[in-house]
Image (cartoon, rainbow over all chains, first blue to last red):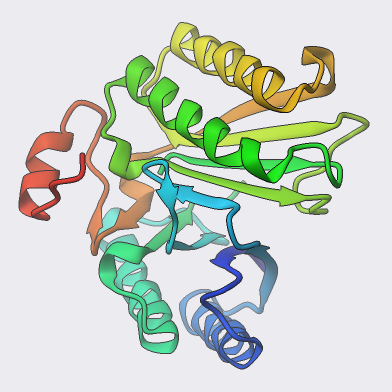
Length: 104
Length: 132
């Protein structure tokens, strides 16, 4: 399993979009790491998310790879993960943060 | 990044306190590290199992870029705990805080890998960000 933490602003992501995004992240981890995603899905209630001390519209998708990644492998995967998040949610590039960390 | 996730018992942090604590977290982080505010995320949740409270009323977890000194990290902890105490009235001994170092090269924001600490200006210029 690939542990994934996905943090979304509750107002921005409907249950349908959430379902689609979770599925797409699962496909991503299968393709990238040959393993299912174990997703910790955290919804930030309205009025409880801040970026630069202003109401936040940021989505964060963070995961631990199941092997150490050279940077020339990590960067394309980060871009791909970001594009998945943007395509499904309609958020802009400045609203999506992705992180792929080496194994814990 | 940084990402500050604040988990608490239900009702511990009043709604009106959240924006004040978030502003403090942003200011403290920027003062201590010289990072631009635009990078600072502060999110509040209640009784989220992913961020175990372990008997405390509040757990603040800060994922910060690698490269900060131990002194800087201790200052972040001390000042942010004090902010929660001030604005939410939670006793200091009921507030747990930890930081975790994440290499900048492992994080993408705005479509690019985050800059290393101290190299933010060029990154921000490239991204036409004016809110830093």
